[in-house]
Image 1: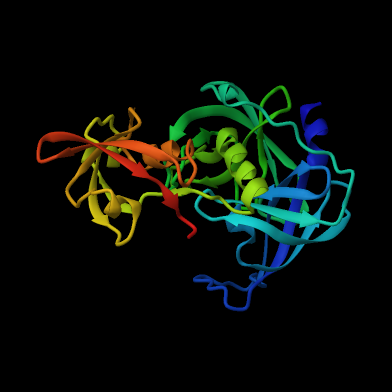
Image 2: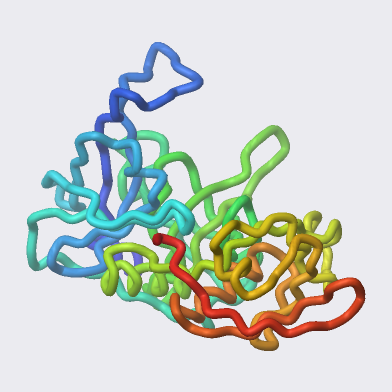
Length: 300
């Protein structure tokens, strides 16, 4: 029943690749066509998917669950969060029900729906559990780990709980000999943040500090760390430069929220908008200092 209820909100996305798209591996079956999955989030034809699904597509066709196809255009895209909105000219679509962050609990059963491997397999479902939360996998934000089968083409499809609510957008997986059940999804709190930004600004208007960090060795390998982030570069004319941060500073917290990894830092910045002031706690040469910084805009 859950699959039947969510399926009208799940679409296939297929398109030709741009002429300058660089494919490092080609075979006899490669015909410069790519596909993925999308989720109806507004009844007026707004489809949520992964940025990596559509960023290199030249012509986009969205195929609804009834088999009808509509030309789509990329309305908004944010590669850092790996989310995008594709718009089609179709009204009265069934928008998916979205869940809440507190519903993402390790061990709870989830269903992944998408278009794995072949476009003829669209709206395939697989079942598993939430295997982990707050995962970092070459991502600026935290991810959900699941053992529900996620294969190429599932990208952009929903991860659904047993209430039929979307708690994540499937994004990637670990693959290789001896590796099984290692799929990753963008959690609903990040989805809501990005969609809200798209609605307000047409982009993710992320606050900008202007520093590059190096993580403590423990944070790099996934161990608990309380050693903060070491500043290895301060960009010219950035807020960090203007307000006195220096290479070698160790950033420990933003407004008393500890940051010990790059993902921690990105997640914390989601709470703020450009032109807001934050207090950054720094250790410099063994001495604790506080810097009041007016955040800038990353897109300026």
